[in-house]
Every structure is written in structure tokens, then in C-alpha cells.
Image (tube, rainbow, N blue to C red; front, side):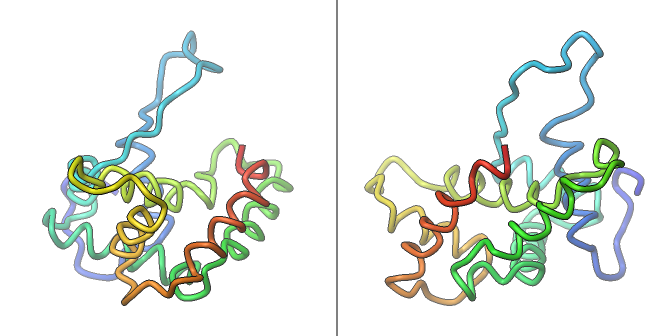
Length: 161
């Protein structure tokens, strides 16, 4: 998809993943392969990725969050099971080097939520999950859902590394 291309239809999870990968982790010279990178996703980066897909900044944030939630239902279930399952499938494919990992946009959404925490907020887990649910455009945050998601992330984090 060309930069600045106007989108008239649905933008898939894979298209969002590709646009965010291009924005957040652009191709580096061969000499930089194997070097650690920092995934830093904030509203400005999301707006630039959204622009690649034809969205205005405010619309990009809403569309991105809904697309991630519709793919994996994380906000609805409080579980990363869908992400874990697709990651396992991804790891078994021989052509994975040419494919954006299925967890990339989920990671970007989690980092985006953290970037939205402000200095006047307490740096507590409930505050983070409130921001995360806002990214996914999920209504409300059940008290136990953040805890279930934390356990899910902790149990399966090694699969994403």
C-alpha cells in the first residue's frame, strides 16, 4: 500500500501491522542486523502509520484499536490465547522472516497504552489497563480482567521473544 493512499474500505489487522512495522522499525542496514531495538509506539507514530493507510489521526487511533480488538478479542476475554495460538502457528512456518509476526500490532497497542500514561497519574497496574482498554475501544474494565490479562502475558511472554 502506498504512503498516503486513501482507504475507502476495511483495513485489515495485517495491513495495520505492516504500516506500524514500517513506521516503528524501518529496515536497517545489514550491519545493524541482530542489534537490539526499542519499540516505541505513541499517538504520533500511530498517526503516521494511519496516514499510510489513508486515515486522519483521530480516526486512525480508533480504527487501529478496534481492528486489534476484533482480531483477538483481548479486551472482551482478558486473554492472549488467540495471540498465543497464532504465534505458535507463525513459529512453525518456514517463511516467517518475510511476514510480520501476528503479535506485532498487539505489542504496539500495549506500548501505545503505556505512552498515554501521564505524569499526573499513578503508575499503577489499574491505570495502565484503563489506557489499554481505551486503545482497544473496549467499554469498561472489569476488576478481574486486568489481572487475568497480566497472568496470560506472564505465562506466555517467552513465546513472543
